[in-house]
Structures are given as structure tokens and as C-alpha cells.
Image (tube, rainbow, N blue to C red; front, side):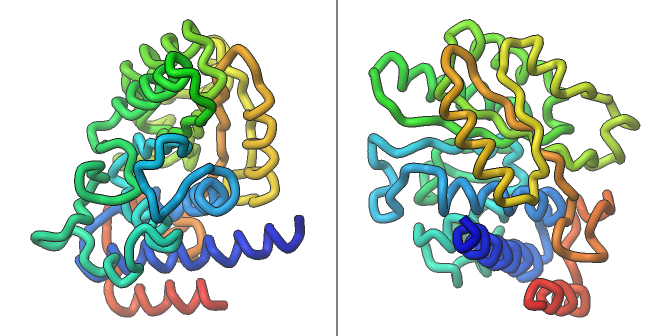
Length: 272
């Protein structure tokens, strides 16, 4: 296990570098919330999910939905590092005629299972995917990452009711609980706390973890696979801007690109 953790920790750093590369090169994007989910995506794509980068539409693959679609740099960097497309392509993020748009696009980007961007809608899509697997008697699993600000949207809870009604034990929801959204803290804007009690009341099995502890993330996904008759919600306590000292827990880095000096400092910190 120690070797696996070390390998995944190293890969998470590379994914964070890719996030910074994408946002810095185009001077546009959302680094804070992308950095906070890097460790979770690393475990999903390099340890947990059943997939094949050479066959992105493989019918038996596990599905992933980035409901907080503005954090596309994290997903793109993960897909590039996993071999879905060249890492060098991250430099084209948000450029005219680039397929790496500001939000995930399933029509043009290999490895993207759902086009997202309008907050609150991704969980509904994930529920549909999980229900389809049940109806088709397939054993693939569906994972969806939600923002803790995003779950202020009412559609999230309509989808949660459906997940419970249809006993979607093949659905695993991860809430990126970094406690910051574009206008401030969750409490200041529209508190969704207590998140665990809300999802539990909607019929979910709830697991709380440190979203930057690789071992905890691995174990949480292992537990989720053993849950029967109900969906699982993993509430991952994270740090917005994780890994970059001047970005951590700073709401201003929700949607701002670093300048050259900041970019170079950030890369040095990740190389340390």
C-alpha cells in the first residue's frame, strides 16, 4: 500500500502542474477548485475506475461526471496524464478552436462522459447513467464530483431523491467540501451544512474523509463498493488551492490565473 500511495501522491503533483499550465497559458480558468479535487481524481483514474484510454467509449467502463464543470482543468490534466490525449495539449486550454473548452465537452474530448457546466445538473446525469446500468444489468459504477457551493442548487436534491428511490448502489457521489465558493464561504453565501445529515436523510450512505489523504480516499471507495441497496456520498474535506501556498484557502483564486512570477513559484513548490 505504501508504494501505491507514493505513486499516486507523485501523480497528483503532476496533475496539479497540468492544472497550472492550462490556466496560466491562457490566463483564464478556475485553479482553486481544480486543485482541491486533484487527489480524488488521481485515485479515481489511476487506481479505482475501470477504464481504457485507448477505447474511451468502452461499454463496460466506469463513468465519471464532473458536475462542477468549471473545474475542467483538473479533469483535463487527469485525462492527459492518463493517456487520453497529449499532455502538451493542456496549453491549448480555452484557446479558439481548441477542443479543451472552459467546461467539459463529451462530443469532442476523449474520456469525458458528460458535458457539464451549468451547476446542479451533473448529478441528474450521473443518476441516469447509474439507472441505465441497473436496467441493462451492467456492473459498471458511476462517480460524480459535486461542489459544496453547487449543492445549494435544488436539482441536486431532486436527483438525490431519485438515487435513493431506485436504490442506486452503483452510484458514488463525492462532495468537494473546500468551504469556499465564488462569493465567499459556504456559510456566508447559503449554508448547505450539515452536508452529511442532509445526504443521510435522502437515503445515502455517508462517508467523511480528508480529501487529500490518498489512503483515506482509497479506503472510502472500497467501502462504497460494498454498500448495497443505497447510493453512497463521500464528503471530502479539502483545501481550495491545495498544494500552492499562496492559493490555499483564498477565495480570490476561485477563477483567476497566476501571473508569470506566481506560476513559477507554484511549479517550484510542487517540485519540492
